[in-house]
Image 1 (cartoon, helix red, strand yellow):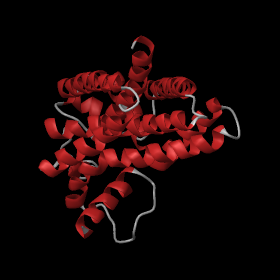
Image 2 (tube, one colour):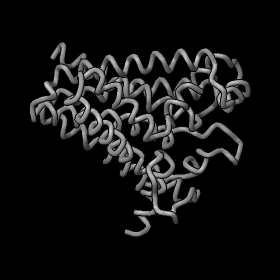
Image 3 (cartoon, one colour):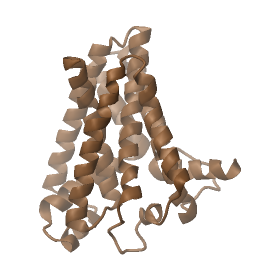
Image 4 (cartoon, helix red, strand yellow):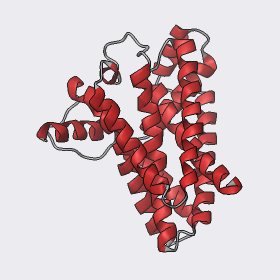
Length: 265
C-alpha cells in the first residue's frame, strides 16, 4: 500500500502542480509505474475544474464560469498537455524529417503553428463546454451531477487514450535525459489494467443518464488511432509532447461526441 501511494504521488507530481510529500521525486522506476494512475489524475483535474465552475456559475454567467474552470485546469497541470499540443503543432507543421520535427518540438519557444493551434483548441473547449453546461441544466441536482461526470469523463478518457499509446508504440527520442522517457521503458499488466479502470469508470457512471454515451469511445479511439499512426509515420513512435497532444485532442473529441449524441439520439 505504501508503495502504491508513492507511485500515485509520483504521478501527481509529474502530471500536475499539486504539492506532494517531500520524499516524492521523479524516480524512473516509480515514474514508469505511474502510468497506471494517469487517468486517475484526470479525475482530480476534472474535479477541480468542476468545483471552480460550480462556484463561479452562482456568481456570474455559466459561460464565464466555464472560462475560469478552463483556467483552473491549466493552472493545476501547469499547461503540461497544452504545451505538448503546441509543440506538436509546431513540430509537425514546420518539420519535414524526423530529426527536424524532434528538434522543433524540443525548442521551448512557441511558433505560429503552435499559437494558432492552442487558440483554436481553447475556442473549441469553450464552445463545447458552454453548450454541454447549458443543455445539462446545471442548476438542478441531476444536471449538476451530469456536468460533474462530463468534466471527469472528458479528462479521464482523454488521458487513457494518450497513455494507451505507450502500451502499443515505441518511444521516438534517443535522448536518455528526456523527462518522459522513463514512462516508456516498460510496463506490466498492472499499468494496463489501472489505466483501463480509471479511464473508463467515470463514463460508466455517466451512462446511467444515457447509455448511448458509450458511443463516445468510437471517435475518441479513432482519433487516437490516426494520431498514433501519424506519429509513427513521421517520427517512428511518440514523444511526451505527442501524448500531451493526444490528450488534448481526445478531450475535445469527447465533448464534441457528446454534443452529436445528444443532437441525434
